[in-house]
Length: 254
Image (tube, rainbow, N blue to C red; front, top):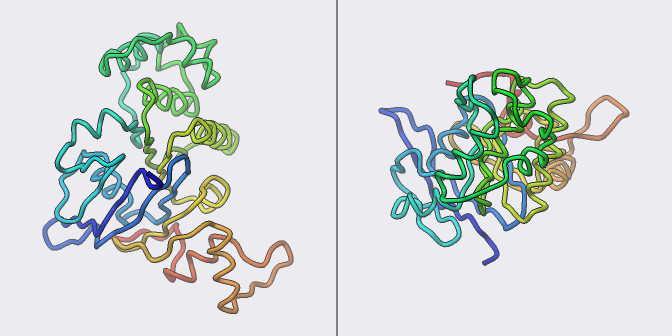
């Protein structure tokens, strides 16, 4: 199977507000697929429907051939999810949490090995409250991977991290991809999408308005005659987004 994830005409409304408006895309095995858009674009709602955490109004999502709406429990067994704000108990040791997550999937693991994989081996006996923001994000990734999922979802994973912690997390996400796990990530950071993602869907007002590799999106913008007054580069992904949506990612939408 070439595509491990297939999303077709996905829709979700809250009252009169159409949060997701007919979204369609697919994700290949072993790629990092990014959904780029401002706050309110529908990114998180789309992810939550794919993760079987939110009901789908219409459309379909299949993961590894399994229909998410029909078989949510089967889907949850083959995906890993890192939410925006992991709710770990501050007074719990890291090793204990890893064992708890593994037990939930019927797995027996060596917590130290998992912590070593995310450069937290020296924190094995530490409590969650003793970790920095970047360390907490790395730890939340390892807890989501204890059952070796086929698809890994991350929702704005680097929000609030300093530049060094962000780049460390990028490296970790690339290592997850290199293990053959498909990664789906939402972000509103241009540089993150451009550097990290193999392909990007640009989302605005509940719709996907462009989908391609970062390099091809920039080429398409230049082909439309785009120029900017600087010598560093002809165009970047932020230029693509502003050209397509008419606004920067810092501008909030309802």
